[in-house]
Every structure is written in structure tokens, then in C-alpha cells.
Length: 198
Image 1 (cartoon, helix red, strand yellow):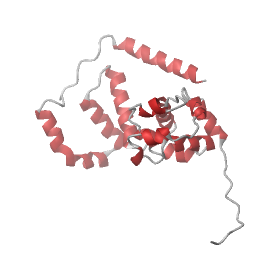
Image 2: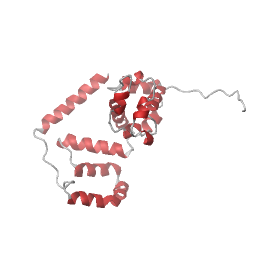
Image 3: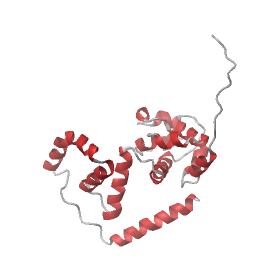
Image 4: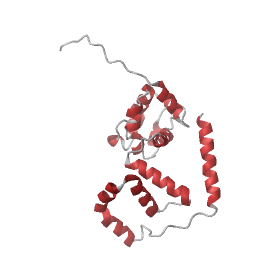
């Protein structure tokens, strides 16, 4: 085997990005990760993720913003909490993944369909106090565009069957009573979340 005297490529650390992530509500837990890989072998969706949670945390520590924000890892997290149960350090991986989703959306990295669904679901629940499948679907397609509508037309039989079996209501449910109080709670939670993260 031929040996070369070539030095390995220098790694550039962008600590600004790492610090931003550490300042998120649960971001500082990333520093506790000891790279044991328990999350990776426990994750049900690891086969379709770009990086396992362990590798994603390592990229964050290295400051690889583009690789982290363009990865699908946190969008494919199903919040099943298996990683949380098995993590020997008790890192709340699901909460970290939620923080990364919010960070990605706030910083314009929401190209994944899951990001559109996330925004559509949240907008529907925050605006009505309840989820309405029709409203979520309409918002999802507004976020994703006409191409996505055409792609999903192939599934129209599923939608028609759901309507026939009353699994997809045509009309939205009534909004929760005193929606104004719900909005106050959401506003207060956002304020507290911002304070706790600092």
C-alpha cells in the first residue's frame, strides 16, 4: 500500500453557529453527548436520515451550519422518545430536534415537506385551537406549491375513501372557547421559551 505524506485537510470550526445552537432552549444538552451511538441504534428512522443524531451533534460542535441545516435528520425524528430512554447521559434528543426544527424555520431552511407540514399544523392549531385535516392540507399545499398538489392527485382515491368513511371532515370544527386566552398562553410560552434559552 502506497503511503503519502499528505497532511489531512484542516477542519474549520465555526463556533458562532455552535454557540447559536447551544443557546437554544435545549441546545446546551448537545455538549453532554459522548458519541456513544445509542441514539443512532435506537432510532426507528435512522435508515432514512442523512445523519444519525450522534453525527448531527458532532457536526454542530464542528460548526458545520449548512450540513446541519440542510440535513433531514430532525425532520425525520418522529418524537418516539426511544433515544431519550436509552441515552446514558439523559440528553433530551427529541426536545433538541424540536429546537433544531424551529431554528431551521426561523433561518430559512424549511425546504422539506415535513417543514411545510409542521408550519401548516401549527398555524391551524394556533388559529383554531384544534386541528382540522382539511385546513392543514390546504395550508400544506399553499406552502409547497402547485407541483405538490399535482403530485398528490395520484392519491385522490385515498382522500375520497376517507371522505366516504367520515375520516376526513369537510367542514372545520368550532374553534375552542375563548380563543383569545389560548393566544395569550401561546404568546407567554414564546416569551418564556426565549428567556429560558438565554
